[in-house]
Image 1 (cartoon, one colour):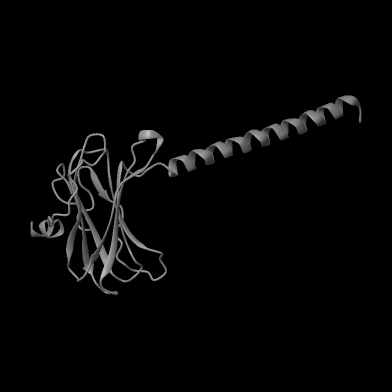
Image 2 (image 1 turned 90 degrees about the vertical axis):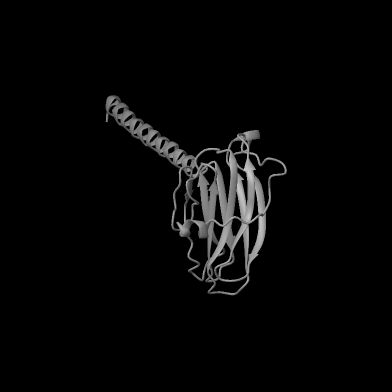
Length: 192
């Protein structure tokens, strides 16, 4: 082979390697964007109710003063709130059962968060944990915990107010507003 053929062959090989490198780099950037999208918070306020992996069906009910009705299993969407998952307490191989409601935006006003033991098919009483997180990017943190409450549901059909509080426009619980005064949400929803 003469010098021109080797140069053409070398140039072609270099062109192929460059193409493969650019393709690989584009793939890495696309994957990084997908991971970033997947790690973005689901909503501004995330309300999560968890209970042990037993056949008990516990329902999360949430409302605030901007909602025409409470959000729960039979009314999954409101004006600013959405129930993401109605966990029926099925499945024996789970670490924990959970239901989650999110808000679209930081909506100031009074919030009421209830747990309802829809079906007590497992061991009673049922310990439940409520966690309310805020995804607002304040203080360099994407998520901060507003409150965490533990309680117990003792009989089928029981509905308990786990938290009742006023949220300010910055996404903080107004000092002194947190209480557990019962306000029926599921019963009120089904009475209409």
